[in-house]
Amino acid sequence: MENRLKVQRAKKDMTQKELAKEMDVSRQTINAIETGKYDPSLELALKLAKFFDTSVEEIFIYEED
Image (cartoon, rainbow, N blue to C red; front, side, top):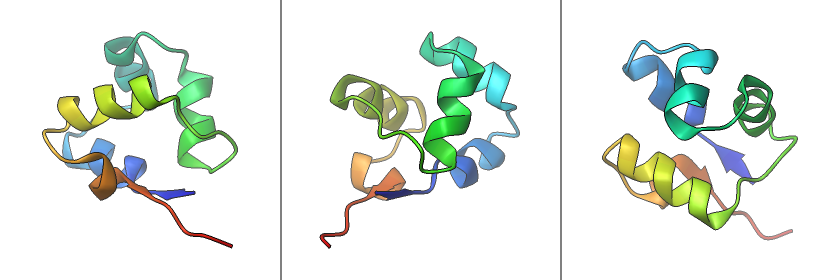
């Protein structure tokens, strides 16, 4: 799954560490999501969308193989 998390984070001029603190996860988790190594749980995806005041689909792009 592709994502635009890094773009959303940059719009708010936040570091991975700052976003991780807001989401109550580790910086490594944010990094893994941004680099596509980890897909977030539905709960975390919804929390991120709410934090960035956007839809889940604006951050995460699902592509079927």
